[in-house]
Image (tube, rainbow, N blue to C red; front, top):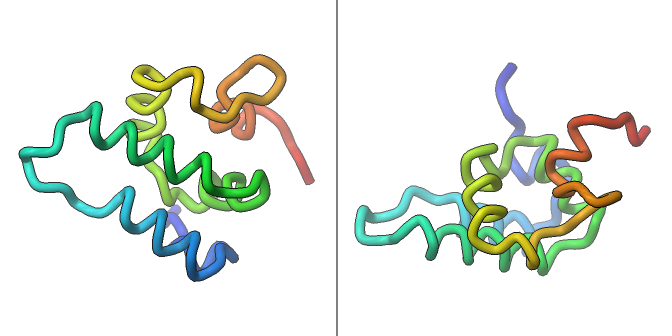
Length: 94
């Protein structure tokens, strides 16, 4: 199944731009820590509903989220004691 683009997932223009910025291909000089910091920062600037749409649309890869969670665990959104991006995949919120 092909992942939706952030815009087609119902994310606003500003959020779509932030997601694209955080997930755009990076030059090899960007460290995993720098990418993780950017992903964590983008997630922090999104509402809960925007984050859920981003997770479901594939705007962030599981790898990007895992790296961000490993470097910045305290800054990553949590849901019932679990990283939000993992919890979302385990429950039906609709």
